[in-house]
Length: 345
Length: 137
Ligand SMILES: [Zn+2]
Image (cartoon, rainbow over all chains, first blue to last red; front, side, top):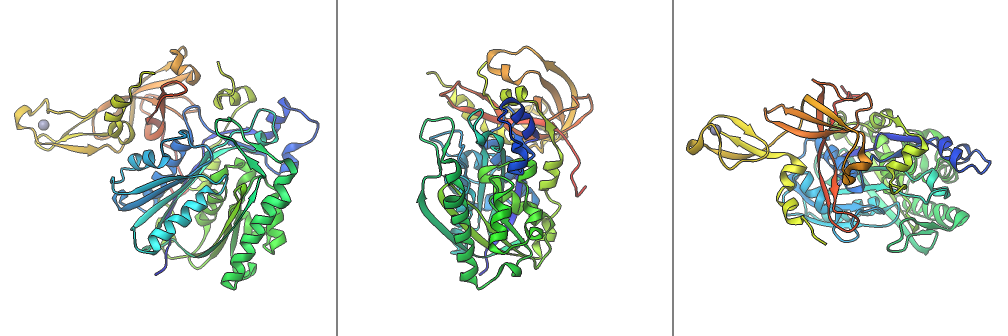
């Protein structure tokens, strides 16, 4: 029996900072905004974190399809910025969406692809008939050290996907994962900011893993890039997804609807899941969507989706990605630092 | 360290999801939850109810100087909100770049209400934000 996405919801904080405003403070003489192809990034409010973003996204997902939260059998929350080192985000989400207590929960962590790993776990439980509905979430309030390159793109946002067998908005036709031990980006326990291998994050990390997972899935399913209406790739900046899409044979038109990074920055675990949501927002029944996440460390999960009739039923049930992108309120660097708690007053 | 975890835990349903009390005898709803109905006393038929969280701002004040715990939030708005089901509650208004107005329609949002310092628990709960239009409206 087919399994897939029954509903989805997103949340993007309303504050934004323009990259030019960050480079005004940490000037190193180049046009960073242009070289990264990112123009502004989302910033969480002072009282928002990965949990509040996960809750808002999960509530939007349940509201969109008017689903009974008591049907939820699993909540898997993926993030690299869970506010508690010990105490699962999923427990708080479950209570906040009024789930029953009869659900299993665990937090996932795999840099930027924790959310797609959570979708795979839900898919296993749902396809086997062990649970009715599962919620997979990717949400982050990412931090870069002040002045570090990461600071230009590290943003906040999240998406939640309800996985089930009935009333599908999109069937998940298959997935393929590619995982290796690649130390391109990491954060040791107790450290506030991550470290990264600079240019090492490109070719041997992002490009190798995304391409391998994507090619693996195309081969497994016997499909070609031309068989898909849309494609979404993890978006650490505005250049990588465009370059990897071209390398794999996907067109600019296929990735355009899901390319949200220029307006909101890299939302880490939320990144390709928000890109997929933006694509589902405009997709029609019968459309096919190709999605590939990337998480440093490193791994990629590629999915093939076929949009079903259910999409039209739930289209207007919750705010779209464009709704959130449109509600921007701009900060200067001083207000931004206050928001991110970088200045301990 | 001292923690208020037990006290916070008891309030989780009302803080996260606005769970209150409804009396089926007189059809009045109460928030926070009550053990007795002030109208019906012994004749009360009480049940748990979940408030939608949508309501109207009755009055508000803007806080510019706060205690240490809330210093990072200033300036912030505290309002008395009349929920659509009737009860009035006090709540913080967020995401209101054009300020708060009496009569403004609001909806619930999930936010951090406070933290027990760097090491303690995080209090999550409900704040309110202005209702805005979305694409499908
Ligand atoms: Zn009564």
